[in-house]
Length: 302
Image: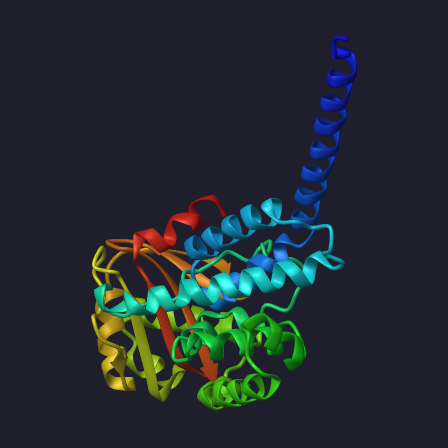
């Protein structure tokens, strides 16, 4: 007896429909948590490019996985993204010697925020720059516990460590980031300081600049070997004043932007760069200038 080809065709059609439905559900589950996952990857890596790569790999793993036993897609995806980000961070740190000059986090436009309706105060360039001193496991534990509120027991499963190890890693990370506590996150204060700083530097008003700067202010510049920038941090009020009166004394335009949850400027002149600051005690304590064109590319479509 010949096989019933109609039954075979119907069975194939049903299989394709089920597969398509599962694929659609997997996509919807991932998209429902994408903003959160992107915020996790970016906090871990400080790089839009690297965060995008991590999310793409996480999506491929998610759609290829057996999801029948996954009760909470958010928890599963958080674990996958965190592990991938730790691996990516280790790889980048191993290659850091190849980077020319100071490495700063890649600025992200947060108006609107691609990270969803979450607190962005820990996404500032200043905080992410501080996080660079952490080991990958320390950074993972700190981000997962502090920014996302995950308990140590859950983080332990993600990183394949004991809860006690994770608690200790968080303690060490907090000690390394102790300087974060003195940073002001008041948008109005940061905007006032940035505007005053640029206006005074444009006019060469040294006295006003000195009043705006903390006595131990540090300026970091990231050109990545592709744009002119100071290779080493510029430390101290007098040196910072000389540095910025020189580069901001030339013709330029400065457009207000909202980067990493805080007011900043996009400066166009001989060079193109973003300018962000951290504040302490009502004065500028840190200046972060990103001129590497690779790190500014995403701002063109902001």
